[in-house]
Length: 252
Length: 252
DNA sequence: GCTGCCGCAATTGTGTACAATGATGTTTCA
DNA sequence: TGAAACATCATTGTACACAATTGCGGCAGC
Image (tube, rainbow over all chains, first blue to last red; front, side, top):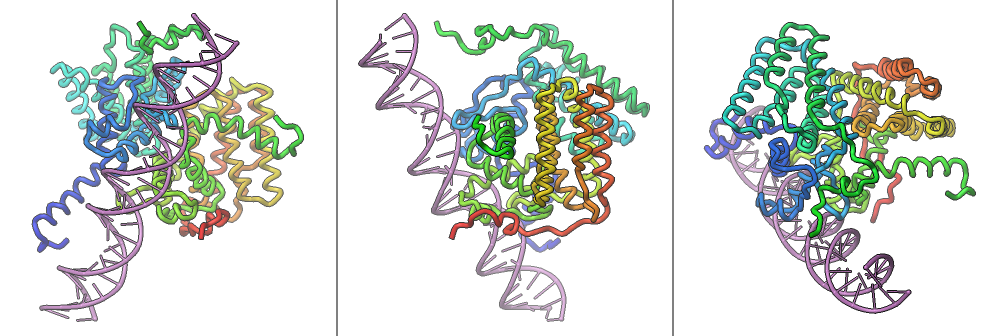
């Protein structure tokens, strides 16, 4: 690489070679920021199911053009996180009970396989990194950043999946995690000690022991416990208009 | 529904009326056409792995603006069917051997679950529709529309998945099917009797019998046989963009 | 009082111009 | 001759303007 270039060029090259791979495969264009920003907001419960995402508003808030907003929303819609209806805009999805079960079930299916491959591929170093991740998450919560804690909790599952080399299933999980956040937002119960950190540590230990079946079972149970804590029992009766549209503010 | 139409048209209408509502809940805007057109081209082997998809060229071929092309490409990139690199454009992915195995493996995982749910939910009517689909596919091939035959072959797996109500896994399969087409395009061997129609009929029969385990095994083996017929060692060279869309009237 | 129709406002869809970036070919100097 | 710096071109990224569509409120008719 040429070393006689101006400082500016040098910095630029450094940025390109360092930032790019990190910022990475997705899209390091401007809409990536907005995409992640919205995703984070969902993982942190700052954005709730059913919220309408108007293009102009987002463009104003983030000081970008509608073009950029549009791309971000399109990506989110493909992740099944927002629902875009032609000429009617984008809203954050409100998974019904059936859909919620379906998503949790898909998560178990996919995470089971990912944890299988992860257990086989795990090394001491990668597991230590993972432990660090859970510790960070626990500390965040103790500092009462509850929202961030949950986001990091989702991060654990993503990081865990990274132990495997299966980017296909990883990408599916990356869609399912925010969807899970929305489900939790909709159906959480008063006692919502959601992703237990202890359980995460347990999972890591079992993976470290190399027992594939036990690891799969543990993750499966872990996800099942999360689902069980939700209030998915009382489905709304099909004919009940008021229950079905409870989210609509009733007129005075 | 009009009853004077030919049998072939009837089947097509059935397909449309069943497929469309789900398919285009997504986006019935103009880019949907382009998206499907490119997808079809891939399923029909008119577009090969590695082809560069330039925005201006596509805009010219389909007589739309770059805006529309852009949206279609963005959607395709999210499906992991094209790879968009900032400022360097979109190319159709060329899955390496590892990735190919990964995709086929993911397909087995997901189709196993889908066929489980499908077997439970199947009715005589839905299975008859499915049989019709395979017959249609077989007829297409006999009329030497080899390409279309393969596309319909992919359709079978999609239609089969629709017997289940699991739209989440369905959407993943809808990404995996075109990816499989690209894999086949890259690694097919001279004797490429790919998706055997007889095997499809067999699968339907087993589902009709209601034997969940047998159905799962059958589908798994079916997919494994497809993978086994591939030569995951030799790669092919990219094809030509204009040849792929020769049927589209180019504007002067 | 309820229903359907019509016009206006709000919002999204599309096309196009221009800026920014990366690729390519050419020139110059050792 | 070779390689590096530069200029040029091709291609994509972004912004904005305008068209198309939808939803809403008021009004007339039953």
